[in-house]
Length: 582
Image (cartoon, rainbow, N blue to C red; front, top):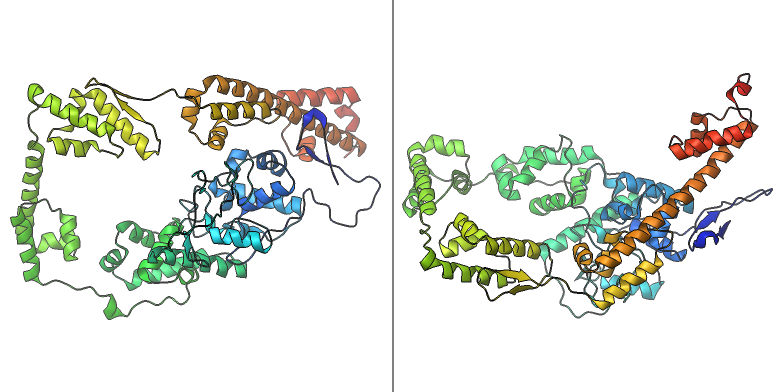
């Protein structure tokens, strides 16, 4: 039975009370027995979506559900990351707590726990939400339960098989990406402008074959293993990789997979290295082996021996090619030549030592000539030309690498850095801001050597929003980075333009943290009292270890230990009185 506590102004403080003097013949759960939408099959709901729906049905903020109720040991910022749907310790703890508090069982399929033995967590999940517009509309029309699918969270799944369209990642109204879990989140609606995310679209259908293949394989994988409720066996995947490695020779396999990293993964899978989902999809696509067959080591069809052999070049063709490289007077490394001729570097040097020596000598001369091609910088002749070009690069909205500038101007990069340090640093800073998707406007001054970008700009709407957030902070602190994400600006910009309001928010956060600590201290004092009284009633001395085993937290902190000793003295409990009891 639950009731709401109005003390201290707690809006969402839910307290679980016990029935007294009553025999309970039905299961009592802390929260509603909300059933996940599809526990099996490809349309299974993800864990983050379930937490959002659980918070919505209890009419509490998602952060309150996570911080205060679901698990006080984990911060809200830890659980809103993409890996909440993975297989880490946080995911396992949250699943266990959901089972206990909601009376559910067999909900591991809401995460990727079944795949923890074969897939690395690296780049497994998208950093933001993705959704199919048609799927959301169908959910809303059919039964009104809108949720997020587990397959939508996986990297590599960008194409809905049911409706033949790409997944959306941005709100069509405000253009902002949606976090995996937000404070006031509601499934199917934008976290910022609160508009329905599945608005009608007339965009053309996607015809990317590789993208379609990846999405199909992910759907088949989730459908196959979730329907059976089984865990993927690492030994099966290892045997599949060994069969592939033994069937192809090294050169052929590197040629099929196109880059060396994937080949090294195939050869080192037995050394406790887990592949990422994207790499497994890439191997499946290149070798034309379904992903399920790779994971189960069943039905792998490899070409016959004569199909796997590669075409070898004749000695006359190899000599002719090497002479062409030598006569072209261009830089051509040994690795490129060996890859082109489909042979190892050792074999190439052993069979054609004289030609390779000449090519190496030609490469060295080419390097020296390319380093000496830059002209000597003349201040009177080149200063205006170089500075004007650098200012054009600063004004450009695209990334301009310093190396490209050096080639265009035919001047060494060291000369540019030493002669034009301010313009050089501004170009580097602009390139960094563009690559980080920081949209700042650059303004060029009339003077040639100086340039600066616009700085202090205050938006009244953002300022009002910050004051609203300030007024809502009472018992629960609000992280500043979370505030910046909620408003839709960067933390650095918010800190620079709204410093006074942020100082007030920091003060309120510190007060809220102090209130939270005090509430936790009071709650733990009550638990210590109950544990001491219970042990005293059964004739057992309430030692530190005995009390800690009852309350399930450490009481060795100065405040708690002082209260514990004071309470024992208040009750007149001494160890000598319990020596006769076991």
